[in-house]
Image (cartoon, rainbow, N blue to C red):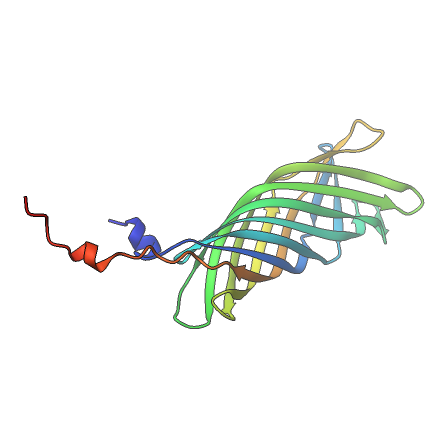
Length: 221
């Protein structure tokens, strides 16, 4: 039978931490649907990600809250009978996630880890066409999720560096097109490479047990 002690360690104590993160984000090319008929492929340049997170470690487990921002500039727009290069604008997201991460302790300064996260994602889509100007300028909150895999290097008991790959995505958002009754379904699926610097706060020392109290003989009536 699994117990809390087996999962977290008999003497485990929560250790709180905070961290900052930054890295590279690639946004997948995929078809956006305008109405139910017209399909358009929107392509984007590589972008960056940045954010903060905080939580606590309990044995090999980490439980954390994370805020991240990911922008990708628009590159071109391709339809069935047209191709528009050098479009302006971007597709970016603000996300608030809850993550669970498990560290595989190997007894050395470098340890692998894996995990997952779920939360809310605000996806923004803004597109400018040459000679036309602003075409799309909309945002939409959706359910988001991510898979996490990486390694951690321990500089000290207080300071650590995480190098992660993260697949981050949101349920397909739908936007309205200004000055029309049309809507289009976009996508948000990304590859992310993230470096995080983590600072751990000192955990409280265990409550001392008095030897005399522990070994005192029973009272004689």
